Image (cartoon, rainbow, N blue to C red; front, top):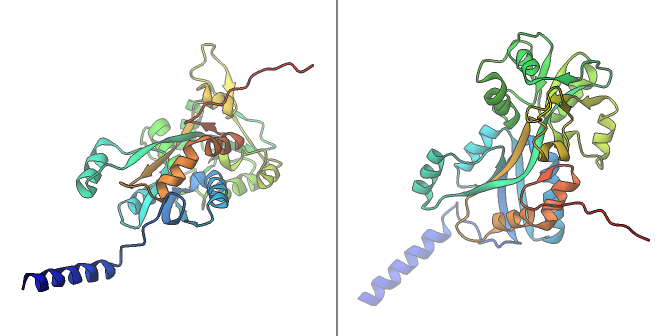
Length: 300
């Protein structure tokens, strides 16, 4: 009798496992399938990272969707999305909620630093801005047309609200475009407007599309708030971001919920180690996991 009862429960367990629609085949650090949601702000650099990773691990199936930061966080709450890339980590309340829900706390950290570039037309004469200048434009005290990458809470929008407007509503002169590419296109066709995009959309000197865009638009200079000498302005670059001379740096955070090594862990390891960090550096961003220093040498 006990033998039949045991067989019955084993059969029921196997049936339950096979009929669970949420369960997928176990992946490894180099093979399998993972769904990722990422802030649209980081699309160019993440596309490059994933392309190189998949060239080394062809059995890795990475399905990535780009959307606003708030939508990424909503996706992360679902069972299908194990990894997201946004501009912030988890706060204490979120960590506690996930630990209660999952039994473990998701890991998160900074992979690299991007920056929010102020975009103006190539013909624009006004290309020097203070933080006060930008705030006046964002709240409508200065009526110059401003465009940014969406009406939902993208990483850029959240940064501008938190750091510049202090949650004061945007003015009627502020409009949203359908993503970063649309911001660049708008500035290209509207010489009197300014826009906000992440540097990885306009600052990669090896990207042919960005090189074409820079014939029509340029990045403005922002006051250096950390410089000991007053009245200095800085362009967004690896050097000024790394030294803190450019005031609007934007961290690239990963958040991962895997309690065992899977494809998300494999991708994270790749982006955290030398090859992935060099991709950030080559794209003119600032790697956060590894330091690459230039050394002067003399060759006879």
